[in-house]
Image (cartoon, rainbow, N blue to C red; front, side, top):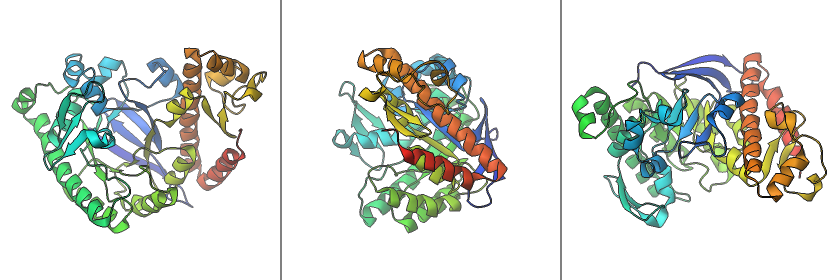
Length: 391
């Protein structure tokens, strides 16, 4: 849909399907494979925008559902859009709100038109449809907009998965139509009570189909017929076994258009990212780096570390000697443990900064190894280090 949005493939690995590239948006470019830190409510928890930039973040993710409820998308629109509101001049992707509504379970009611749900904040009733999701995301002005979808629950029967992907296809068509209307018809935007702050938004379609490979293929083909700027694999990491998840990713990722970005939603751990990159996936997001950090779990080149463990009470070493982030360059394990045991906010800040840096540095190493044609060697070495385990 967007003439200002493009993807350039730069290099491919000889032994895997891994590829390195660059995505161009109105607010700048970002390199792929890319990991998007999750800024649920307009903030990557515990980190300032300056910290994100220093750590090497090129794109972050915002959450349509949460920003709709608080502070409200019209408030953000009046402030000039999400980029200006949060003081972030780089690319932003917003999800559709579908997954968050899906996770409400008993608080939602789904029909062909959309989903009625109760706010997790105050219990108030709201209705989210493909059209409304596009209106919210247009008001936010994100660079990449996700089509509204139904996140297929797991486990699901074949009939349930088929019905879900059919609904997602119909909603994808409606999403595309509404976003196009908002961008080409000033009256439509005015009637929606918003102004368009980013005229060059890209729209991604989301592949569903649960763990049924043929249904995944059908979902992808139907989305390609509609035409999107990029394609995402949705409905995974929702309770299925890892083997089942990667059976889907291994099968469907190579079928996704090579000239468009490929996005695996909600994934994940360093090990999962390494494996998915080898399948040809370009984009990832997950709350794991910051959520785990707030619980005292740190990612290192030698595996996960629970900084709360008593063994680190007198440990003067950095969290990870192989890491050059600000935290590892300046602070000791003993100090970080002290901060957690004292319930000091700085503990979450420093741990979140380290985990964010670890993920972003990992993505940089992934891209470099692909360009050098050594991705297989890199991934084997990297995974071997993680397997050692700190705790």
